[in-house]
Image (cartoon, rainbow, N blue to C red):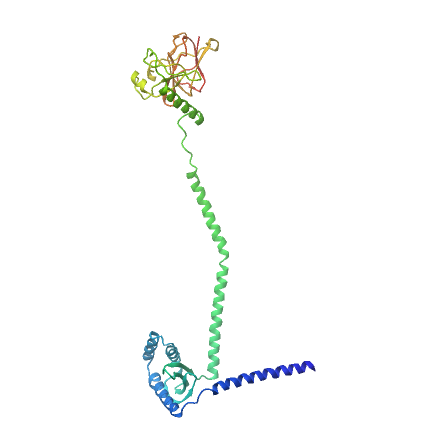
Length: 381
């Protein structure tokens, strides 16, 4: 019982609220001042003439001209109103007459409803005027359609809307179905890139040309350091003393017991003056030896002495190189500084000389042999 009473009270409160709002709306309309009868009549007559002569009597081209003019002057009310009238003109048919006009007072001016008859249907034109400026504030065209026509238009709009939505959904579904080809495209691009990479790899991995020198890089560096050190030592040495019979000035004795003396390059002439001006290098004996003869004039080297004929004094190679010539034979008497062999190293001819006076006990190498640093080249007694 209580629940029924509550429901009834709620319905009564809602109905009272609706009536109150309606009364407020009516009271607001009633507050508008009534229009003067003479003003009302004048407005209605002017509105009829305006509608008949300035709108209904215009051709399509003239209406389009006014629409363009309203667009240029930014008159939105006239632009929208005439555009709607032009769109509905085919369905209205030919103009017949203006039936009546009713003017009313609004808050900012006047509103005039003009009822007209056309060949196919009637039309209500609503014009709004500002009381102070006289500017048009409203222009709406409302053709009267039958219920069948309204239902037909609603159905056509429904079909167009549903068709548009259906087409959009089909397009979205097609776009989604294309996503599966993204992975295929990425795979093709990856395969193409992988095929291209091996083709470029041989170019990048092309082997560098081999070094011309047969000796390892580390040993060449050691030899180069030794040659530079010897050259500096020879340049800074105290050259005071007697010259040898070959015209060379004795150089300093290094810590390893070797002597510094100048040698000539293979590309130089065999003249003694050019041999003296060539760069100094480290050799195994003191200087004052004659210039080396060309390879073509070198005497053939005798066969290496057997192991049992080795002497007590060893003549060792100061650096890796190749034997170009053998100047002495087994049994020859030599003095300190006499050239025994010619060693080619770093494209330079290096004279290997006797470290002391004595007799050649053995020649351990032959012309064309390649030797390492420290190898025994000959022995003396």
